[in-house]
Image 1 (cartoon, rainbow, N blue to C red):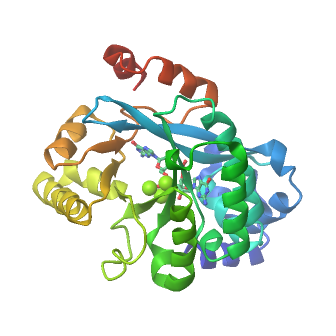
Image 2: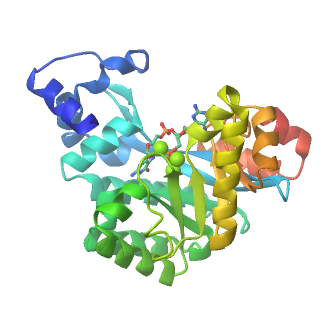
Length: 289
Ligand code: C2E
Ligand code: MG
Ligand code: MG
Ligand code: MG
């Protein structure tokens, strides 16, 4: 898997120049780890925001914060790679804290109906210290906890269920919501899914991608997940909607929320604020997509 691959590459001591155009070469994880250790994280880390769209209301319901690391030496590093590096180097709690503070600084300026989704690492969820820190940051930001959703992946629920559940219960008790991200991508957590607080399921992007290849099968899978959500009493959001056609399919599968390039690419805080200001004006939203 990815971590093993990185470890192998790192021991070969490859040195490559990291730019956005050389993403393939960014698997030199040793270099990423070393640069991350010495980075001025507060200055170099930031979050961008991708709109989440409510089909029923016909408007943006919130934004997902997505991590970006702009390193002076490496350039923009793929978040999948630097989050994994932060996890391996024991830096993830600090990285999570910095990203959450920055995301909330933007979110507290949004109107009350607009929510913030934030990704937690599996390591955050099994660390009582990190969850305590996350809860402190939410409290000190002044945001209504009900406007805050934490996205988690299935792997943590499977790997260390008891500890993960304690964290999720603590977050839910303070009023925050929990979303299961990349649902259906790898692990099967049907045995666990009703045993921790859950407010939303996000279908993995692969199911929307599959619509183009095999519309019948893709649509049936999305419909099955939408039905599961309805039975569990949780919201359903489909990730990776890039075209009007995909939007129509997802809607016909009974899914209420969508997120993808059609409604907006990840954007800076100023651009997100502009999009919120244009809320309700369908033409402007369509043009921004
Ligand atoms: P994710 O949470 O599932 O985020 C969705 C990813 O899909 C984002 O990539 C987003 O830019 C991309 N995406 C959204 N819409 C579309 C679309 O229509 N088409 C395509 N092709 N892609 C789309 P990104 O920003 O590179 O993030 C990758 C992953 O990194 C995230 O997956 C999440 O697992 C992780 N990540 C990002 N930010 C954070 C963070 O603050 N903390 C932690 N722990 N993980 C993060
Ligand atoms: Mg996510
Ligand atoms: Mg996802
Ligand atoms: Mg993902």
